[in-house]
Image 1 (cartoon, one colour):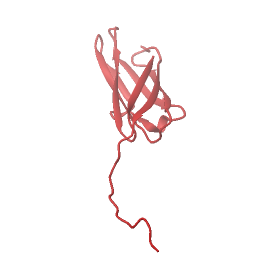
Image 2: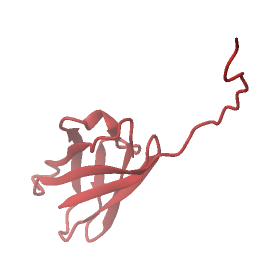
Image 3: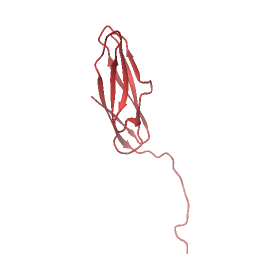
Length: 116
């Protein structure tokens, strides 16, 4: 699955990945961001995700654009064994697109156009 982050240059965009646990045991995942632009993405709530039995949880992924080119990374969720129960390893493709550029500041200057 691909998660797309679109927004303005230098803006922070947050997306949520919803994870469900259909089993009767608790699942624990270690989340990792890998890839060319992994440094532009972050997991503000930390790298460990715990999902109670028969429940669901959301993982927040933040992206802050630094450049105009599209950024790409992969979110890996690797299961930790809890009581002999392992969940499936999950992967999500993360892609960004800068849709607009907003000025950070406006400066007004006066100067002569021509002088003899």
